[in-house]
Image (cartoon, rainbow, N blue to C red; front, side, top):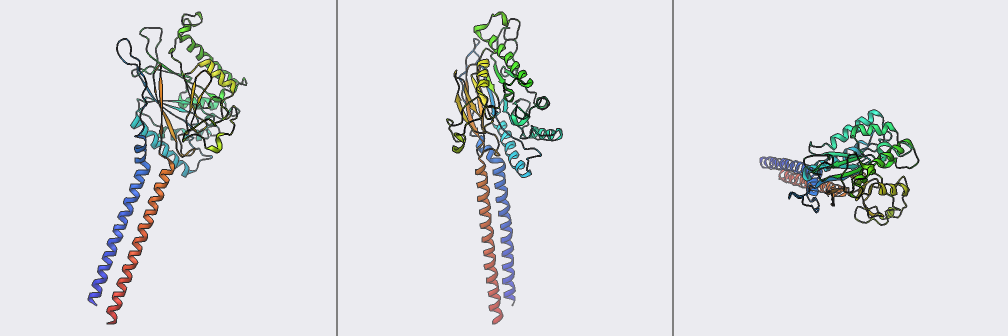
Length: 412
């Protein structure tokens, strides 16, 4: 009997040791998968992104022209109290926060542009819900003192044309200090001084349009928006060499003579996404669906006005949640930026731009794919199930073996 007891004690000790080993393995696997999927994967993916090279002119004194490093993203669609589900908000908002903060740390841009639809329910939200959404945004997209944030308004921020109001626009602009014209001068100054005073610095201009107000129906908000754009157009034209010295331009502050970059939420008019290509373009079943003017894209008339008034060298837009590159009449290229959120697509991304007064270069930086993270979690769960089953199978075999040993000793 003493031998039997000793054998049982040995078996129990071995089983306890196996349980401790299982718990340790379980903890290590869970912790490793969480660390990888929620933190490390963002560094591994975004680390592969690099700023594109751009041609730089040399000044008379030998210094090279400064290059602006800008991030462009769109359609974050932070959910609100009406449509928001806690699990969806937790998952997708954590993804955007980690992606954005990792990109800031690794890439160190100087300016971040968000091209509209920051919020999903800005057109409906009450004052209290709006404050809550703004606080969440400021936490997720927090910036260092060396990075500027410039925001373009979208239809989900203030509503479509028939929903927007001066109250919603002012509420949005109060938070984001929205401006129609942003000029950048280089490393030492974020604003361009008067260019008619020597030495004339090299500057870049960005025109940020409230595309929701480009309805063209003469509403008060639309009329004010068009009047602002006409004034900017006049300033830009006065800064171009061919009209310098004109009596209409005397006494005003001139802007950079280089063509501006046009930023807006709605894309300029195009019939559909049929000619768009790339892995983050619209799905095949959606590409040939015609776009509705003033809803999916700007109207033909509004698009022609913007191209004629501003004569941009580059147009960047959002709204469709998919990527597209279009060459408009007159040679102005447009790049539609996909959504930054897993809620709208499996493979979100943002644009990295290197810009000078005479040239620009763009590259796309993809974020981790949602399917990759989900597959990793599923694979880890499958591995843990196999590990647990193997443990219990071994435990059952050990128990049966010990029971048989005891029976044998008792029958003797």
